[in-house]
Image (cartoon, rainbow, N blue to C red; front, top):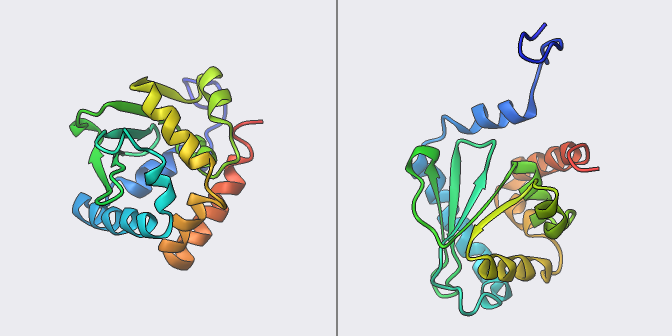
Length: 174
C-alpha cells in the first residue's frame, strides 16, 4: 500500500516513466536533434512559421510538466530555433505554455481543443497570450499533424513512440 494515496503501488507510471526515460539524455545531443527537427519542419511546413508574423522574434517556452526539461521555440521562418533546457535553467520567454506531455501532444496532434484544455486547467498559458493564440491557430491550420512529422523525423522508433503515446492519451482527457 502506498502511504500517501492508500492504494496499491502501480507497477508502471507513464508519467514517471517518461521523466526517467528522458532524464539521462545529454542536452547537447537533444539540442542537436531539435535544431535539425525544427529546420526540417520549417522547410516542409513553412506556413506554420509564416502564420506567426509579428511574433517571429519571440520565445515560446513549452513546459511538459512531466519531462525533465522545457523547450524554447523562436519561430523565425528564416532561422527557426528550438532548444531544450533543464528545469533548473529555464530561460526567459515572452510566453509560457505548460501541461503534461500527453496533453501537449494531443493539442499539437489536433485531437484536443486548446481552449477547452485551458478552461479545465489542464493547460496553463502565461505571458503574451496573443502570441500563444497565434501559435495555436497556426498549428490548427496545418493539414495533417505536426506530431506525425516529428515522429517521422525519428524514423521507426519515433512512429512507435507516437503510436503508444496516442493510445495512452485516450485515457487522459475524456
